[in-house]
Every structure is written in C-alpha cells, then in structure tokens.
Amino acid sequence: MSTSLKPSDEQAKVITGCLMLLSIIALAFVFYITQAVLIPFVIAIFIATIVTPLVDLLVLKWRLPQIVAISVTLLLVLSVGFLLCLTLIYSTQQVIAKAETQYSEKLGIFISSVFDPLKDVGGPHTETDEEDQTETDQDTPEVDVASVDRSHPVGASEPVDDSQPVEAEKPETGWFQKMGIDLNVLQRETIEYMRNSLKAIAISTMQSALNFTTTSFFVAIFVIFLLAGRNPNTVVKNVTYREIEQKIRSYISTKLVLSLITGTLVGITLSLFGLELALVFGILTFLLNFIPSIGSIIATLLPIPVAFAQFSDSPWTIAGVILIPGGIQMAIGNGIEPKLMGEGLELHPVTVLLALSFWTLLWGPIGAILAVPITAAIRIVLMRFESGQTAGNLLAGILPGESSPVA
Image (cartoon, rainbow, N blue to C red; front, side, top):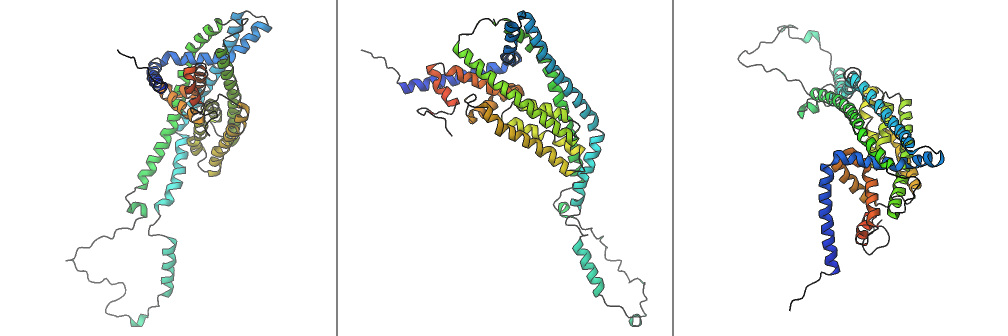
C-alpha cells in the first residue's frame, strides 16, 4: 500500500521561492532581449498615467472630442521633450567646439600652475639652502693678499692629471624625480585626460539626446493607443489597477515638480557663477533627480571638468560651482522630498538600491529612472495574492513574522 507524501508548508514555501527566482531570471533575460520595444512601452505607460487627468479634463469638463484631447496632450508632451533635446544638442555642440581651443588652453594654464611648484620639491634650490649659503659667506674670513703663495698666482690653474677620467657632476633632482615620476609626462597626460573627459561628456550627452528623439517616436505611438483605448466616462473598478495608478501618479508628479525646482535652482546658480553650460547642467539635474540617491551625486559632479576648464584661475569659484548645487540637492532631496512623499511607495531603501542596480543593468540609464515606479507596481501586484505577500513584505523591509519594517 503506497502513500503519497505531501510537502510541508515550509517545503512548499521553499519550492515557491525557487520557482519565483527562476521566473525572475527568465523574465530578466526576456526584458533584456526585448528592451528595444519594452523601454518605449514602459515609458509610454508612465507618460499616459501622468497625462490621463489632463485628457479627462479636456473630455469631461471642456467637452472636447477624445481624439482632439489626446492630440493636444500628446503635442504638449512632444513639444517639451523636443525643446529639451534641442537645448542639449546645441549646448553640447558648443562644448565640443571649445574643448580643443579655449578650454584646452585654460586647462593647460591651470594644470601647469599645479605641477610647476611640485617640480622643485626636494630639489637643490630651497630657502634653507640659500640661508645656509648666506651664513657661510658671512663666516668666511678675508684672505690676506700678502700671504698668498707667489708661486701660484691667483687665477692660475692647478696641474691636472690626465690619467684620471673626469666625471661630470650630476645635477640634484627633486623627490618626484628620485622616485621615477616624470612630472612633465604626468602633466601632459593630465591635460589630455581632462580634455578627453570634457569631450566625452559632451558627445555622450548629444548621443543620448539623439537616441531619445528616435525613441520618442515609438513612445508617441504607444501613448496614442493607450489613451485611445481608455474611456474617460468609465470609472475603473479594478482596485489593484486604481492603487497602482494613484501611487505611481502621486510619486511621478511629486518627483516631477521637485526635479523641476531642483534643476531650475541649480541652473540659475550656475548661471550666476557664469558657467557656460549652466542650462545643460540644469536640465541634466532635472533628469538625474529621478534616479534615487545616485542621481544627485552624478549631477553634482558633472560640472567639475567644465568648471576647471573655465575657472582655472579661481579655485573659490570652482568650489562654489560644486558645493552650492550639491547643497541645494541635499536640502530638497533629504529635507523637502520625504515630507511631501509621506508614506510613499512603501519600499525599503535597500530594495530601492537593489532595484536601481537590477534595472540599470538591464536597461541602462532609462532603467535607473524607471526602477522605483516599476518595483512599486510589482509590490502592489504581489500584495494582492496570498502567495506573493511574503515577497511584497520583503520589498517593504518587513521580515516574515514581523509587522513593521526593519530599521
């Protein structure tokens, strides 16, 4: 008589966890392979989520036909994106044009002012040596001319032994030369590296802007179909869908406003300092602010090459270009944003960091921007199923058997 063994609850959870892990790996592979289609589609979903209230306003309150309301909304979104791309492309062209002439010369002057004093460190000509030489001259007694041996007149050369080879005295070198470091070569390589870094930033920004213009075509098509397939007169009764829509819309709207304020303040600050690419860095700050934690750091460090190239003779200006925008982002990101977000998306900071790494690995910079809302949507869906609540609680930092998030 054979009896079938049923797995225990613990074994069932282990099996479920392993299956979920395998499913995540398979889905990650599919997302990576199909990113050319999925990235525009996901962007379109979030854009449609943001502009849906505007479409509803135009249709329900202003009584416009739905196709007209969708066209007006889409035209507004594309106009804003097009202006951003034009600004980035024009500004980066200016950087590339000046990198070889004006910035290269200023970089050379600045780096030379840093390296030239180092070349004499530990060398033979120091202030101490000059003081010792002065004291030696003062202590040397005067020579009695009468006591000089007449057989060797002054100025006469001593007999030289030609049999002994004469070695030329090697000049003393500084500490860096003694360690085998050629400061001249290091100076040239530093100037070349800074110049190439400046051009690389400009070219990368231009390529991203051009790629965005290409991607925006597919995004626009998806947005049209998403909005056209939605009936503004019908109230969505699906609780899960409404919760995802409300939370994602609240997060993106709040983040959009705060990012716009941050980018504007940073752009104005850099303009007051006279930085030539202030507008570009303001726009980049606006975009990078959507990336949690890391984005603000990158936005703070981006102006450094341009600041060194343009303000090479003013270290305090360079410090202001770095510190003041960094302070603005820290005040808004750590002070204002948590209060406005409130409960937020209920994601633990470790979950945000892991999601950021995961989606950036799959989709690059776009994945970094979309990481938090995608992960929040996944958690909301998981919490609607009993078998997925454990994973959903883990995303919020709630361990099994606990009722509150881990500190």
